[in-house]
Length: 66
Image (cartoon, rainbow, N blue to C red; front, side, top):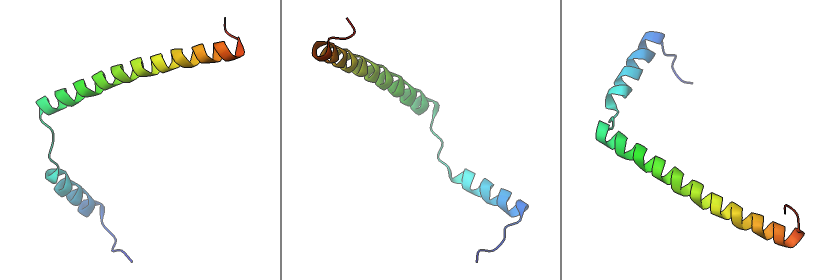
């Protein structure tokens, strides 16, 4: 059975763990954000092209959506 932790001990433990965190620099955050935006843009183009190909295939096979 685990020992009970008082609210004060809990807050002290949270503070100790937060002090161990290695926070990213402003530059690292900016670069990561830019990478996410670029990846989202590339992924949206990819899925747009796949959607157009699938739409063409379904239209060709079923003859709907003309």
